[in-house]
Length: 240
Image (tube, rainbow, N blue to C red; front, side):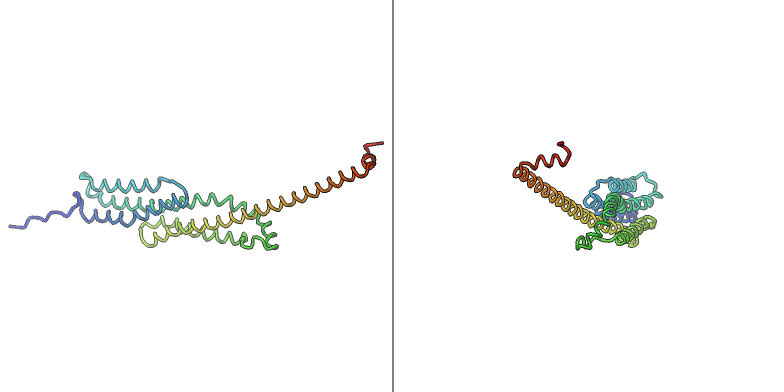
């Protein structure tokens, strides 16, 4: 008698190899998605549903794959779609964080450029020695933009491999570099404004002191010289 056919190796009625592929996809990519969400929330201070929504969709594809009425021809599609949702969950938080930081950076840069000429004059007196020139700032921004472009280019790469991982890492490095630059410019702006306000305060203090001295001396002279008041009034045209 012929041997009976061996039972198909399945998990929940689905080919074990496909299930293992899906589980390996979760194993390899969920930690990356979790780090991306942490980066967006903790580093950038933004709560965004983009990663959560994509992870929900991953579970949706897993559920579809395990349903008994799912067409066997669509099982492979569930893995492919789940991988794309993981890619979005990992990459988009970094892109969102960088976009928000660029918006915050713009007014800081504009303010820095506005006071840069004054900073340059102060540097001749030994102040603000580490304040970068505009050319230096723009060179750093150019490099940050290149990293961001390399990160965006990762979207066109349809495999989650080392090249794609490097693209995601470039997004993170672009954010860190821009954040460092913004902190540096903000620090110089704060230092300049504090120094400027201090100098203005000193000038007003000197003017006030001189005015007080003049007023005191004038009052004393008016007391010591009785006829001085009449003389001053006549000189100013108040008396005829």
